[in-house]
Image (cartoon, rainbow, N blue to C red; front, side):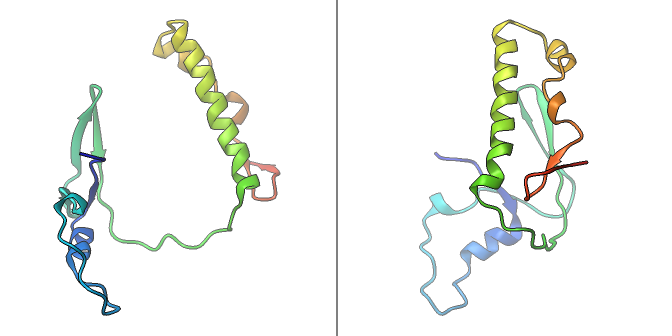
Length: 123
């Protein structure tokens, strides 16, 4: 079994419906269909690694259109994620507690700032 997908019931219905362009209906391969769906009712709760995760359904919304980015725009963000990950991993290897990792503020150099598409920092 591959990844377990959680999706709205509307998506499940869409996957079963033939395409509007007149093409043949999709194959009914059960491996490609959703197993777990949810509606707009109560949050879906599941537990991972001793923590409760609430999947809170939200109504369909338009996400808008933002600036198109390229590789050079995303690389600073990637570098930040990898740098923070390396610092946290180093502390894990040193058997630091979660409280010690949080107190170290490994994201400090990035807190409160963001990189714009033009490469400048803003708050």
